[in-house]
Image 1: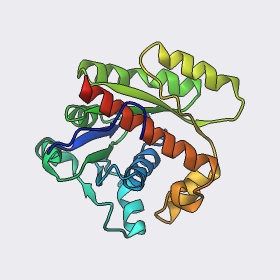
Image 2: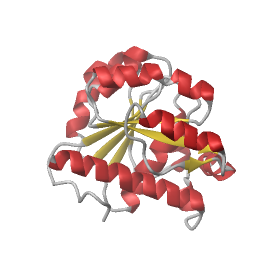
Image 3: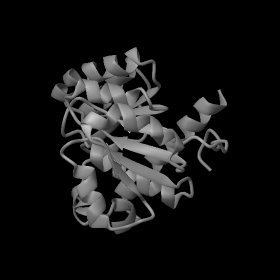
Image 4: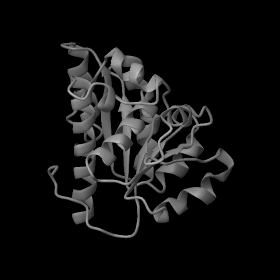
Length: 222
């Protein structure tokens, strides 16, 4: 059982949004891994939601060809109407992948979220670009977590990234390190949780879900 207890049973689905106006930070990979881990941990059922016009999460899901992890692809023009229905979709948790740059679309997703995850790569460019996303989420008064993704082992800039982000909000204690297996597993509709269960990447993915789930439980209890 993750720290922070378990979520109380209720009819409404909890909504996690993975958001960043910066592209290339790993939103789709993180969303897919969280959905798979939720099911593995017995904390589902989970549903994945793809609001990105590029449809990367949808393509991964079609390669997966598994009915136990459903996916809903919502077109940009239908966001305002479709997103509120997630509360009654019958799943324990909905995990939303969002597009980069489109502030209005991200704002619509954030408005229905119980928790927002903001991925960031440890680079000066990424840190400079994250301000718009932080402002958008704070204006919506939504709880959020930073997730450091694509970190290099023993790189000083990773610690600097954590320190910089912590000035603006909570940083997940789980760092996702740069390894080729993250991308390689996604090519065939899988995750590192399935292709290399005993590996470090799989442990990181599992720990990130456990921490995220605990944050939901603690906020609900509060």
